[in-house]
Image 1 (cartoon, one colour):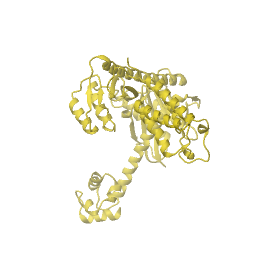
Image 2 (cartoon, rainbow, N blue to C red; image 1 turned 90 degrees about the horizontal axis):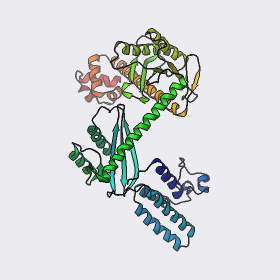
Image 3 (cartoon, helix red, strand yellow; image 1 turned 180 degrees about the vertical axis):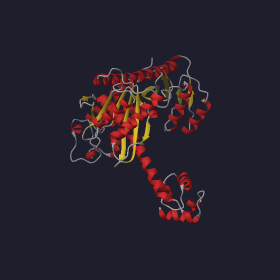
Length: 470
């Protein structure tokens, strides 16, 4: 039978380490005037006060690493030796603490025991996907014990074949890993098996094999990884569903907000005005659906008018081409702003014969510029839970990032364009060639006269002039 390191066991391991190894838990790494409460209740050795030597504290950390690495026999052997030394020096209280630590390690580690798995250094990969996303789970077995697991979600790869997904994941995941296992167990036999094994073996400096067990305990272990990936994915989707359900209830919406769109305007004193849009489908932010807009009809700083223009343009895309890049219309719109922005969006909906068909709310910020509530056009605030707050904040951060990054790009392009245009002899073609060669105004400034003169259409005299002007 295989035992997995469940959430309860993981929490027990963490609690055990904190209690028995007395490592620091604070985030302040500066020396203190006095030891904190954890030291006085014997949950910390107070390295900040110098109450424990660097060597002694390093030994604690090394033993924790052995424990997490599954090297139970090694750590118990070390602790037994340490206990004997304390006993010989008649430091019985310290010897008793080491004894308790040994018993605790044996108790906690036994729950992670993986029977009938003889290999002591293997990873197990399980995959599950549905029509929305993909989840890949990785189990780590060291010293015949499950020491941990990780999972990864891939929202944009659901249309790929499973073999292609796993093959791509292995190559990317282990490319950045320092310590590789001896074996990687997975369900299917990969077409690229030999090439991947060679790549991993060369990187690790040892033989690394991909195994696809067909029967017995090893197959059941792969099945467990797959089952866990399914459970993990379903739990994630359940969380997203609960968030959308809460949003529907809090805002009193008719439909579940499966397509949420957020808009934000970015400018500096009315210059380089742009907008950003981000999309959340079924509670998941889809970065590939983010859009950026240059303002076309508004002159100067008038954020509500800019918002009205952008939302109207976005709505027209779906109304004129439902199968286009913008896809279907949203069933909830959020504005990074208050009443004026909400009313601007309402005007855009009215212009496109969608009045009252798509609910609109604003994201109200507190003094620290964090979302504190949602608000409607009647100034009614809707308080949100911590989980919903986290979701809304992520949306707000994403749309703000999209708008700001585009604003910087447009600003830099316009500033670069104007500076080069000021130099006589540099027309549109030569400016394009310069930017194609160097990529930015900053890099043109850093280039030598000879490097500038090597650009198509620019002679040495013009290169000297460009260098001097910039």
